[in-house]
Image (cartoon, rainbow, N blue to C red):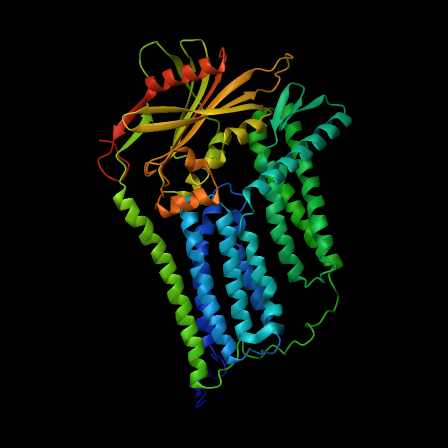
Length: 555
């Protein structure tokens, strides 16, 4: 270094005090890994919007980066593998990136499907591990492995597992709430996910069940355990404490909101709901932080074998030929990642250009008195759950005397974060949440008109007992319609299997423009009568509209 300025050595690395190794080949290799991770993040971010349980995911990359930088202060001296092994790692890394492509295609077909997303995250994690091993060998890999694995907390868990956890936590919170209210002298009972006290009912929704707290506090617990450098033997204690805190504070929240409704009415419930949630969540975090302060190791020094914190992040190449291994590896990884992303987009754009939609449809109510109906308000709570772009609700009486409660809503496709949830709000989930019991699932009702095909799934539920000792039956018909379905059976849009979704990806089927029709029907004489009345209703209200272009606008 001359006159305090950085210079290049024979290997191509920058030498100097402040900017040492700032532009070393290692940085390019890390940058290529980050580029591959960004390809996956473009899919993961769809699960972080609105009321998602994973909206904390925006913070996870920054917290992981903080843990990584913090560990750089006591990192071990690097001991990179031999150059021939590094070449094998570069080749393996390129294969890992190429392996992302099929899962990227599957996620474009159905962004709500989590299995391909989890596999993509696993491939990127392996790529990151390979980068760490290439930089500093096994010691560096072990030292920085936790921040890398911590990034997985922003990936949603499989939907079926999450649903089971939600139902389990909801039942536990509802039963604990009713037990404690009864012990306090209130007349309380359980109706599905409802707590009924003195004629007033309060629903324990998914968020109140504790699933949101479980997801967020699980991530926070992992972060605090590494922030305080907890020994691995003490970390299970933190997770046990987090679970106990979740159940305690969410049960307290449920009891408080129930008493608010009983003594203050729904107006006070709406006013205090969010504030009580914030207070209970803050209590959980405070309890966990206090526990960490109490059980954290005192006076613990850097891990054994750590350096004084002044070594380079990566090894200095030994020669220009050695440096080229890093540069070529980084270029191969970056080019492969860019090709994967561009190839995925080109595949779907090609098929979308070939399969322009020809029509759309809407619900239009007749003006004559053949159908007695009235428009009804959609509650704010339902709007927050469905997050649709437009929608309406109608109550009506059909000519045969059946009473209907109809929802028609849709998504323009501009906000994928909203559209990807459309398949998740199935009647089997939403109806059971209010205490209804699924009695039967019949074959779908198919309705066709002018090239339009609607496939209405048919369910029969037993509604909760309103207090009269009898339970009414309800036929529920439900469909999700996509504008560009490539002439496929609409039932396939809802069938999530590897074979089915792979076929849809190979066909280039991708669309986020969706319309949902939900019809709840009571007082039907029979299954056949309910289905005939539905078809008659659809003939009256469904209007097919031709499209003038690919934007979805009707002529």
